[in-house]
Every structure is written in C-alpha cells, then in structure tokens.
Image 1 (cartoon, rainbow, N blue to C red):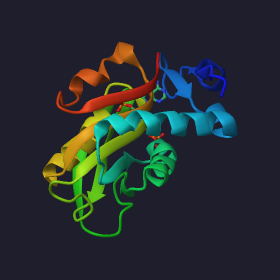
Image 2 (image 1 turned 45 degrees about the vertical axis):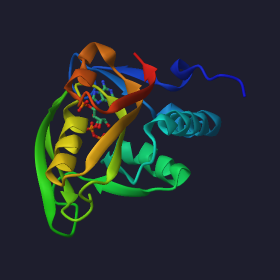
Image 3 (image 1 turned 180 degrees about the vertical axis):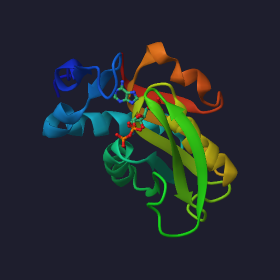
Image 4 (image 1 turned 120 degrees about the horizontal axis):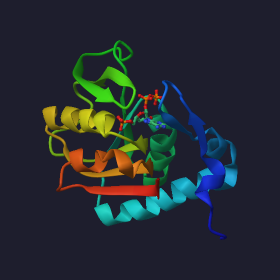
Length: 175
Ligand SMILES: O=P(O)(O)OC[C@H]1O[C@H](OP(=O)(O)OP(=O)(O)O)[C@H](O)[C@@H]1O
Ligand SMILES: Nc1ncnc2[nH]cnc12
C-alpha cells in the first residue's frame, strides 16, 4: 500500500471558530475512503502495543467518527462520552476547557466498569482539555486508562503533558 500524505486530507481553516485559531478540518479525510481506511488501519495496528483492551471511550462528536470504526476493528465495545443532556440514563459529569471555550462531558454511570482496560480515542489532541475530562470520568468510574489514540496531535499546544504518564499516547499525525 502506498503511504498517505496526510496533509492532502487535512484542511487548515483560519480564524474558525474564533479569531486566531487555525482549525484542522478533517472532513476531506473522511470523504476519501482510502485515506479514512488507512487512518483506521494504522491506528488499530499501533494500538496493539497496548495489550488487551476491554472498551473504547470517546467524546462527542468528532471522536465518535474514529472511535466507532476502531472499536469495530479491535472487536471491543464503545462507550459514548457526550455533551450535557444527551444521555438518557444516570450520568457522571466533568467540566473542562478547550482551545476555544469551555464545556462539560457526561458518561452513563454504569458504562465504565471498575478495572476495565480502557482506550480513549479522539480526532484531535489540542490543549488536552477534552481527553483529560474523559480520563477524569474514567477515574471516577475506577476504569483503567491504558492508552490514548488520536488522528492528530497539535504538539505546540502541549496537550500530551496533561495526560497520565502511565498510559501510552498514540497519534498518527503531528502538527
Ligand atoms: O484538546 P482539546 O483542546 O480539548 O481539543 C480537542 C477537542 O476539540 C474538538 O472537539 P469540539 O469540542 O470542538 O467538539 P466536536 O467534536 O463536537 O466538534 C476535538 O474533536 C476534540 O475533542
Ligand atoms: N485547532 C483545532 N482544529 C480542530 N479541532 C480542534 N479542537 C481543538 N482545537 C482544534
């Protein structure tokens, strides 16, 4: 298989959603079947270093786009972590900051099992606020986060430093 030039499939959009932000638009990658497939295949291959995984957790909305095919490929369940008010059952909740605002995330209180080996997935690691909130929810539920997987890491924002040293961080594209 020929290697993919990821830059061909990530579009920089200046000043979105706020002035000063360079938004990394992944929609060209999603629209290109060979690139999308390569991204999922490469992420799943790299996740093999994590050992057995019991479940994937991922934050709404773009995280789902990568978490769902990864869960399918790895043969594990998917735990949706959602914006407030979307989940129907009892939830755990965590507030967080991100590059262009603040929000909260929720997970069903019975979805993350104590001791479960959890992989957290998102499209982008920027400041790390979102994925840290996911990891905090996992900690509340006493699940064991063994790794983080991202399509893309914005290294200049230093999000990786906010993540637990004991867990591996996998990112396919570094910008
Ligand atoms: O590392 P951080 O600074 O937290 O930024 C990364 C997060 O930002 C984006 O989500 P966003 O909140 O824009 O929501 P969306 O997925 O619904 O577009 C992206 O999908 C990540 O989840
Ligand atoms: N610059 C950025 N581009 C795309 N998604 C993001 N999430 C947080 N920062 C982002």
